[in-house]
Length: 251
Image (cartoon, rainbow, N blue to C red; front, side, top):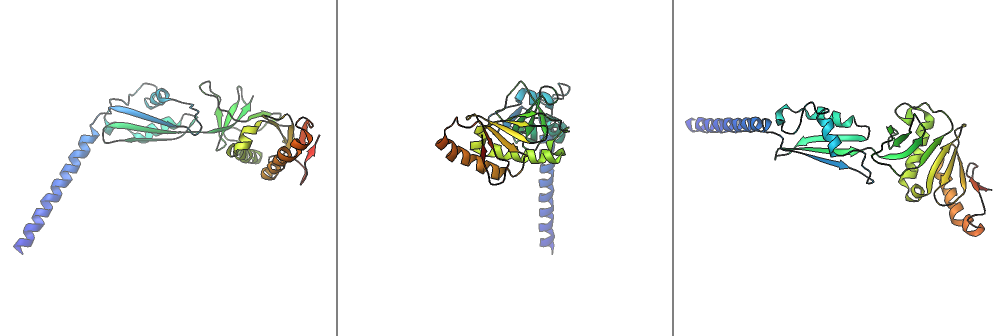
């Protein structure tokens, strides 16, 4: 019995020492100063709408409280993430500490898939989730141009309307298809909501109709490019109409 009590006492003391060491280590880490801020900005297509200097400025709350040199324990990492995510082109931000005392910042950018001309001043980008982003002089994204001939009531996201939901699906389809992403240069949204597309290479205007049944319409358009134009001549037609079911009307 005494031997058992001896082992229990030894285990208790050992466990207590481990807890003390863990607590001491945690306190030591909390008072360690940030030696470096390492910023990694992810870009899917090579476009950078922000940079390290801008991210650091936002983390420092416009230079009112400096992160570099601060102790790790006094930093609110969630607050720092929220500051970074307030940037219109930042989709997500992760801020965490490494064992060397560095502050790691990973930034995921929003990806534009279309650019609206003349929408509230200089225009707006549309990102993958439908959000309207400002046009910036820092970077220009090579995406289809969208010209509006009608007023569309969007404030923050084009999915605020059913028409915008359909338009986002159409833009997403174009962006994900290498051929159409390279070929479709501009979309003109007419007053009745129908879309006319202007290609990058050939001269024919594409009467696309409403932004629906887009997969079937693009299959017909590919047929027009692969079989009709090579046989009839690339400059024979000035327009191609995809609006009619199971028909391609060329003029």
